[in-house]
Amino acid sequence: MTDLSATEQSKQAVMAFFDTANRVGYREALSRTSDGLQWWTSATTYDKAQMLAIADALADQITAPIRFETGSVTAQDDRVAIEAKSFCVRKSGVPYENVYHFLFRVRDGVIVEIREHCDTAYAAKVWADAFG
Image (cartoon, rainbow, N blue to C red; front, side):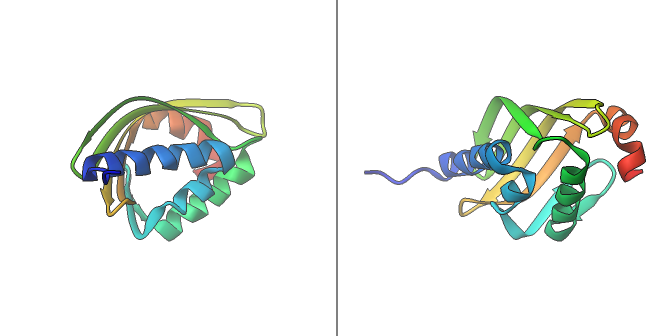
């Protein structure tokens, strides 16, 4: 049996992140990340504790765990780029479906950095009253 290449190991770590999010929730998916996680968005950068708080706040706002549909995946060395769509429904009945491009950095099979690009105007519109 051969060892996985670093690139394949990185890709598997990212796909496991999305699989966990879809099966048991976003908070649990964050358990697959480094304690030193840095999550970049166009607005700010969050650490793992802040992302866990966001996951909890999100869970309070939606009827079922957010679900991600992954699209194309490109992996090289410790970087994994992935296109994805999210789906959930707020308890108010408002659906939320956004599109993303994520760039993950993985070290030793653990996600250490996530750069998230999405439709921020749409996200702000849907979540303004919850996360204003």
